[in-house]
Length: 474
Image 1 (cartoon, rainbow, N blue to C red):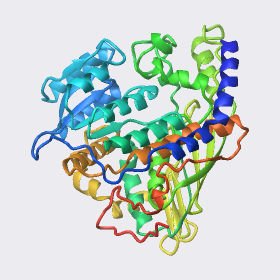
Image 2: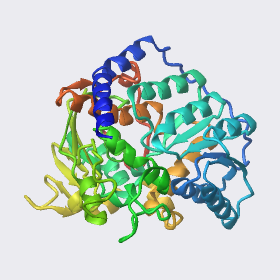
Image 3: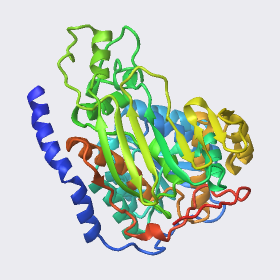
Image 4: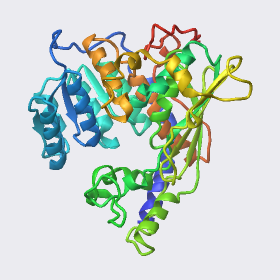
């Protein structure tokens, strides 16, 4: 295993060094952006939105509940594991939905489903390595709206594939980044747009979440159970079947979009601003090995596995309009959950870890305000109108808000608020951080996935008429 890893790292380093140039070459050779081309939907006004699911695991089932709650219909879904199929069928029935057609028996059963069924939208909630092939298949099959879970892509080539196929087919690809719909995140977006913090100059964000008990389990439970077996790979269950493997063979920010998505909206990335370049570094890798030894003993069969991904990966990004962004990935450490938001302008800042806000001239000098008071004042329209309906939804209601927004887009045959360019730019942090780390922290350039269109594109996500924007976009 150690020899295989050394061989892999030699190949990965060579590949990573060429990764940015590959993306830029693809950009130069790709077809130009198509203006306003769309796949026509056969849906009539008043008809339920017919949804197909690719993947029927726990994340997909959270979508099922919201689709049905919003009046949608799960027409068909596919998965290769019978337990997931059974649980999804039961959930649909329990929620009062019609029986869905099921496709299974092969990892590529989704292709048969796409060929036989007609959908208004397809939602993809599968292991990361399948996101792009499944998204491309859905777009090429003529599905008008495709929602893909995060991160949307793993390599720069995959990022370009999402953009190019969306442009070529006219299918609308939406990255299903639910944190963009979190209540405080949306309220802060209103604060930013109205100029409460002045001109934004710096942001911090990340994914800081102890996932050791998700990356290992006993093959039956979603998380590790104290005293139980420590498994990953084919013998394990749920995410431990595939997620842990990425920490063996990759070293970078493996999961950037929960933090980068909201920050990109604050900074108008792809719409008047863009990410220019990135530099990343990683610490030693210690957390996963320590977890194995602590829980399984010094002689556990996994004791000699060498994990490549540093416990803490820090990426610094420079933006076209001058701002800097620090993105942190930290999923193998003993720590409480945090996305580490800090949004700082010339007149004040929001600091998520302390749930505090400071506004010069309005807060007491050198003293924090409670963020809740400001969040209540700048509460976004979605939360003002739908908070009661979202109470039972996953992740504190933000999953419901996201699906509601996705459905409104479909009903109005409108552009998705978080599109293929966003999916590519936010997800590209993974590949670029890997490339930078492999080169000792060198600065690597961000591809411009919009091919220059960012200069004239304008924000469309979460516009709230109660809080008109005063931002300058370029």
